Each structure stands twice: as structure tokens, then as C-alpha cells.
Length: 372
Image (cartoon, rainbow, N blue to C red; front, side):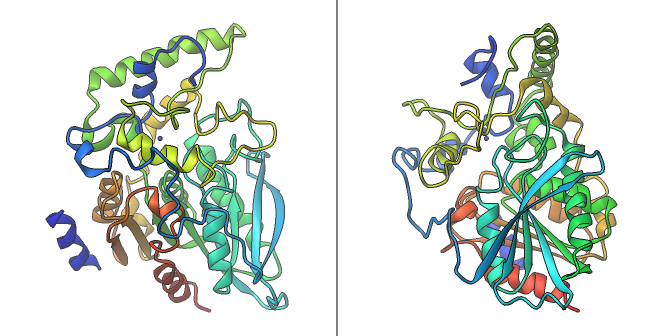
């Protein structure tokens, strides 16, 4: 804890197929626990729904207008988003805009709508998108992992916003929550139209799957995961059921890991549960087994320094099990950059706890860096 305090002063995750539970836990970075992590989280924290500290995932505002929009990616796939704008927005002017990406395994109605609404209240045009294969966006099979298509969705959102008469294409920012933080970074490296980059509770989905938290996954375990996914491809190629794994547990038990309890409290209770039309609540949050290994080839922080001189802001709870990823990105990034630790906040806390989320910091960051 002392190390993070120093950092603050210096810089102000039902299965398908025949995969058993142990294999499920190996198939996602979120499911891999680290030695000593038990002491960092309250083991009873999600035994009941916790709506404390301002949890408000489904927040709406009478100050903001909402419109559902659909646009094509470069791969001619539909990307669906919720476009938020302050009521009374001058549509004859060119306004700054922010693209908001949801946590990995989530959909736009989980966390990203909240952020988009709050930022729209501050005068920004905001666009909360569903990543391909998730929510209302296109892609089959559902819940497939494709880091390249995820990153492309952010650039497609910039295409859309930059061609709207009320948006200034030279003042488009991006905000990625959890896994979308790494997808937004990946997009920004090759899309200079993303002028300011912010992440909250970021997961490096590449490292989380290659190494697990604190590099607790061995190379042999990684090879077992890859081999199991390769074998499952034969099953699905022959017409078998698409297997999903990882994500958030469907039930709690005495042996449920604290990190899973943290996610359960959001994804499996009324606090944040959302099942898109046509989807099964048994499969929400769970990526397909055969595609999840694609994260092994995902290195979003390589060359992150080339985003400079565009500014980057990394926000994480100082109690977050994921804090290593924000620290890593910050260390690798070039100036201008800032790392903000939120005192007392865990990873999922920053999904929806408005009493903890530093909206003022996000507002000032985008106001400063998307100025006319």
C-alpha cells in the first residue's frame, strides 16, 4: 500500500462444451487468482448486493438527450451505440465528443452509459458503443474475442462522430473502461484522430490472459489453455455447441474467490445485471473459448509512447486488483501523461460508484485537451 501512496503523490472476469471448472478458471485472466490477493478484498463483499457508495449503473439524466445510432466499421459490420448530448446543445456549432467503451464482457448499458451520461451533463457529445460480438453490435458467434475488431470499433466511432455536423472532428477523445482501456489504447496508437485518451480500471487483456494477475500463470498453464481451445475448434467446426468460459460466475459458493465475488455483485445482481435482447443470462460476460486465446497475441502497450504528444490519463482504484495494468501503461507511456489513484476504490467500484468515480478529473482532462 505504501508503494501506491508514493505513486499517488508522484503522479497525483455456466460454461459450454465439456470443459470442467478448473479449465474455466484458467481460460480467463480474471479467473486467475494471485497469491496474497485474498487479503486485498473482503471475502464477504458480494454475498449480498452492495449498493453503497453511490452505485448508480443505470443512472439517467433529464439534462441529456439520448439517441441510438448505428454505423459501419471498416469491415462493414454494424456498430451500435448510444449517442448522448446535452439538451440545448448548439447543433450549428462544432462540439467536442468522447467515445466510451464498456468493460470486457459487458455491454454499453453497463458502466459506459453511466460515464457517457455524466460527461454529456458537462457539455460533451458522448457515444457509448457496443463492441463487435457484444450487445447490439454485429458479429457471430456472440461473445467472440477479436482485439483488432474491438480497436477498429473505436476508429469507426471516430468516423461516425467526425462526419456529424455538430461535432468537431479535431476534438474527439476516447475513454475506455476495464478491457476497453486496452482496446482504446490499441486504437489510439494508429488513429491520431483520438486526441485525448483516458482509461478507468484498465485491464491489459493481453497480459491478463498470457500471464494472469501479477504474472501468476505459468507458461505450461498457458500452453494448456491454448491446446484446449484448439481442440474445441474441432468440436465447433463439426457443428458442436460454441463453448464459453471465464467471465463472471453464475452462483456464489463458500469457495468463490473474492475477485469473482466483486464481479458477481455487479454483473449478477440488480446493481448492474443486463441481458441484451436475444441473449441468455447464462452466457453474459463469458467469451468463447476458441476465440479468447486471441488475447495471447494482444500487446496493447507496445509502442504506447508513440501516442505522445497526445495526452493520456490513467485512473485506477488504489485497492483495485487490476492496478498493475494502469501502472504498467503509465510507466511505458510518454509525456504528457497522468496516473490517478482513487483512494479506497476497488476495480469494479469505478464501474458505477459515483461517489468514488472522479468525474471532475475526467471533465477537466477532456476540457483541457479537447479545447477549441
